[in-house]
Length: 149
Image (tube, rainbow, N blue to C red; front, side, top):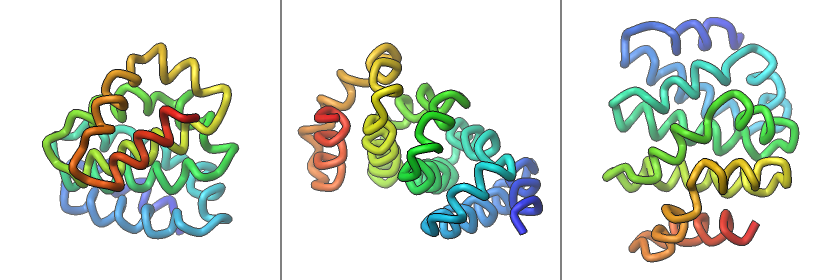
């Protein structure tokens, strides 16, 4: 079940945290799991992993949130639970995979009218605009999608 994975994300062992968040990320591609993962309290630990100075953990946490943010109910919850600041910070990561997952999540979150003003207020637009010049097509596309929304 999900509770042991949530518990593993809360440990201080980065290897265990990574295994747990990768499992959550993989489970989060399923529509029903998107709801269950949030209901089981996984959002706070995932958001905390965005702040850990480990690019693998950041990438997988942002990827899990990108998957979870395809669900309309989760979009608002992810923002309300404090993910915007860390996600915006990750848009400046030197690791392209981290940036890619963070910007894809921002694109998904910006599809919610309730989130748009908060995204602007948190200062994401200048960074999203600069990502339009990224050499990585997926990053450009997701940044354009976030701005378009």
